[in-house]
Length: 192
Image 1 (cartoon, rainbow, N blue to C red):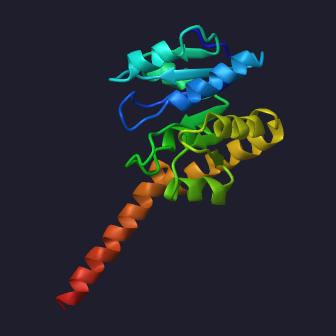
Image 2 (cartoon, one colour; image 1 turned 90 degrees about the horizontal axis):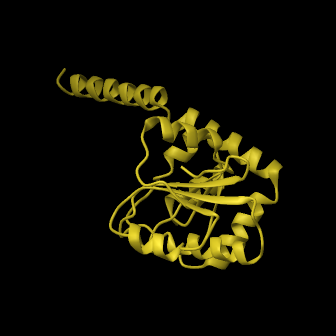
């Protein structure tokens, strides 16, 4: 797919739709290229209505790889080599908490979503938030992560723990079953 696992891999997996914004990420990649920083690679996995636009915007950049759609084995491979997950959305995108792929992978998340996502990343020490349309801000946050391997390692551990303790299938189903039991018990108690 053109992915170089020896580089710091910044991975986006999602849809190239109108609620996403990869222009800021590609602008940042261009700045890294101009600065001669060649140890970072942006791997953008998807397809959709903005594919041509973003592919054209990234023309000539050797640090951006478009993989198009990826299958399960390719996703598993990318999960294993990713250093930073990118949650890149358009301003005022309706998504909230679309970061589970990255949390289950156990990587720090670089997101531009405010509100619930920003609070979750900050309070659990598993990622940073950048301004959706500001490549300089994106780069500032990216440099914090790429220049501090210990911080990346800590955030990776925090991401994996957060997913395991709050969002794993076992945890979610256990809480759901307990909720349904309590609901059924209160329903039965109301009829006694």
